[in-house]
Image (cartoon, rainbow, N blue to C red):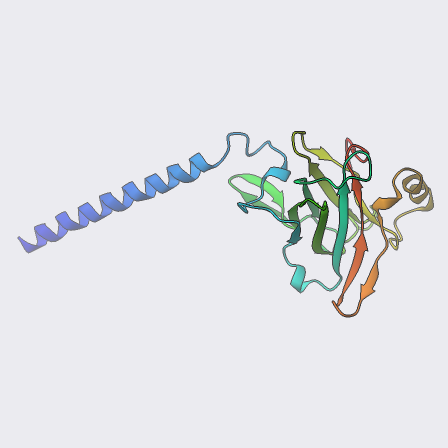
Length: 210
């Protein structure tokens, strides 16, 4: 009799566990937007509320730490742009995109998001990336921007003034169109990292590809 009671109790526990597990799985599935796999990564942040400072994964362990600051302006180049989301992703220090997977969607591990306040300012704590494709490509940080009431847009990448792969012809082209995207690194002894600045003007820096 005791054995039958035990088995019956165990059966109830297993049924309850399976029900709860199924509910949690269903809830998790319902939390994933239908367009999750195809949408831009600018929307894939997990924080409920973004702020204007973010730190890229593995920042602490990297040698060439980098602090990027700047202001995002409206199209007039003067008025600070509020509530603009800026997303970046990049290679690791060896020039490789470290890919991970979440809910069957691949993403670049070294990434981050900021959202500007009324002053339009933003800060990323990241590190100097390596040259992609075995050093044949320039070092770049790839950004996507999302302004209120507008679709997300790729903007011209961050490049590095001291990058030996940045050839003179490429440097001249960038300097004549958007010199702000060339980062000039200065080492800050107090913070123990490189610092650089890039301001962004909405509607002036979009690009179809990097």
